[in-house]
Length: 267
Image (cartoon, rainbow, N blue to C red; front, side, top):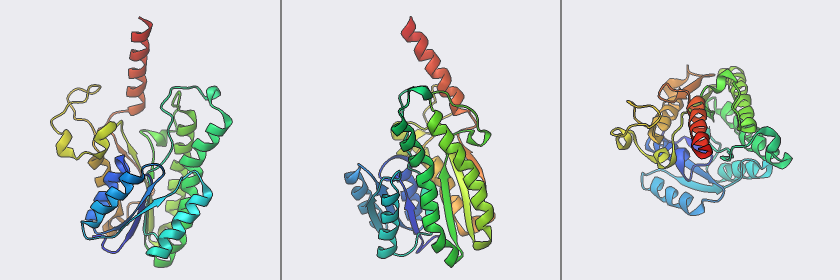
């Protein structure tokens, strides 16, 4: 188990991050909950985690801000100690469909800082503590088939940042292996809305509209993979890009749905 380990999950007040925070708390981790705007949800989650008999700390920080990242890691260190497990879940995503030329320069900068540079900064800030204790777990979040570095129309900045994280994942895995630090990437499929916080049993009876015959994905699907990668016995697993998508290509499914929607509107 992971009793006494300190875990930081970015963007964990809601969604996949929340489900991951609960899963790591169940394994005995003290959990730092990061949020930007969801203060009420963050403190409610902290209460829920503390009820499990472990410590919880809610820390506001925008991952796109270097100063916020430094302050957050310093706050955790002063309160508890160094971070043992870092789950980089947070990252801005623009849902509106726009080609790259329609993005403003500030938007591009924010997307890259939130999805790549901020993650790199947090990794760098937690690595000294992990290396000194010769144990650590870093998890990056990607998207389906990110390791193939394919194009994703209307998601250029986001996709470029996440593909950059694939390289970072593999590089850090090699560099830090001798210090007991593993680095992996988890790539969730198209898990939607409230399903991000649901358990497998809650979606087992449902059917995915786009993929008849299989159930939708749930937050538990992702959280249990992360929990497995964080276990002490998973020290031989590093540098991996792991798909949690039901075996389907989320980019193609999303693109197909968008084409159908466009066709309906044109008719």
